Amino acid sequence: SDEKKNGDVATTTTQKLPKGMVLGPDGKPCRACNSKAAFSSWAAMAKGKVDSPQTTTAATSTPTTSALSTDDCPPDVETLGRSSWTLLHTITASYPPRPSPALQRDTTTFLSLFAQLYPCWTCAEDFQKYIASDNGRPRVSSREEFGRWMCEAHNAVNEKLGKERFDCGRWEERWRTGWKD
Ligand code: FAD
Image (tube, rainbow, N blue to C red; front, side, top):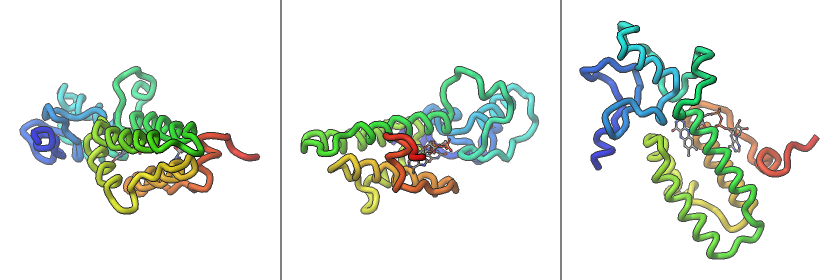
């Protein structure tokens, strides 16, 4: 699609861009796909404050100035991710122990639409592939099963980003009951 064609990872362009900067459908840096640090570094370069492209890796870097962490700006890839996982895990926590067949179908549809509409398009593409894979196919026949599935899906992203895996035996403590003492 046009969106995919335009949404390419920036390497060399006529405009100077930080290394690894992900572009959106409009050909401009995609805010929801990059960290605030990468986005700010691009903004500084665009204003001529920085002479040469930075070596920031968009997906993993973190904001470095206090001004960046206290604003009310549109979300970067990390803020969007944290909020989205909070919503997704909380949905599993409030899911019935024994859902009706209709709810199971709706939940599977929701996950598929969520994966299509997720605003970070690079994240969305990988999540769609995960859901379509043998290991990643959504399991929604009970709260326990759905909660574990979501935890494993989150771990797949954690692994991709080089983060620690979460112990899925404790998903319910983290997202439903609170930690046991
Ligand atoms: P998060 O990973 O956001 O986790 C929030 C909290 O959830 C943690 O503090 C922890 O208490 C808990 N937690 C952690 N792991 C688990 C788990 N397995 N099960 C249950 N609870 C857990 N970012 C990218 O840079 N590239 C991507 O391709 C990408 N894909 C994403 C796809 C999806 C569907 C979503 C929702 C987010 C994606 N993100 C991606 C964002 C990324 O996963 C993180 O949200 C972001 O990097 C912020 O990470 P964080 O360390 O603050 O904690």
